[in-house]
Amino acid sequence: MTSKIQKIKKIGGTSSANVYKAKYYIDNTTSKQVVVKSFRGQSESQELLLQAETWMTLRHDNILTPIGFTDGFGPFPSIVYDWMPGGTLASYLEQNSDSLSVLQKLCIASLIQQIAAGLCYLHDKNVIHGNLHGNNVLIDTNGVAYLADYEVTVAHRGQYIPPSVRWQAPERFDSQGVVAPTTKSDIYSLGAIMLQVFTGREPYFDVRSRSKVSIEILNGSKPSRPHDAHIADHHWLFIQTCWSVPEHRPSAAEVLHFAQSEADLLSA
Image: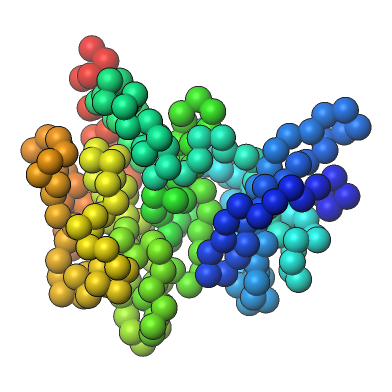
């Protein structure tokens, strides 16, 4: 795809990659906006490119599938994705807080249903996301949610505390090294996303720094329930089951069933 990609500008980055907005020329008369993720480290690049190749085989309405690879954005090949005009889940919730309060619970239930459906599909395909958080769920122009990509070094390692720490399962915290993600740690993260969707706030909203969040997690503290944001008791109880010990957490299919039941009740 290299000859068909034109860089526009850098729009963000993580500890391991830079993210660019670009234009992809499908032919001489047709183009579309895309996102290019360029990796800084060789080992991370190789591992993530292999994961991207796996994701390119996936087909689901709530999975953001890479559309190809390109050179010219860094020292290693970069991954190309479709542009998501709605931005991240976090920015979407913030920008649409007024409309969401009017559309209210049906819109919220639909978002959770879409996110759970994407994760259920991944788990059915024996794919673990491993880095599910509010900035790795992207929204298209119609308000549909897509699970986006992943990182390699997402667990707590030494002094490095990733931005995704607020959504991470406690069993992934190990100062000796990175603890591999599981379907159960994905469910913990999904519960944290449900809290974010229901309340419009990130987990541990009352703890400002990531280092203090990591201390809270290591001390066994879970995200608190906002008292000034409406969240139904049965929603809060279900989220807490996602945060229970791994063997007692629901499956992605059970979370999807819960979200579908809520959407059906609200649309009846």
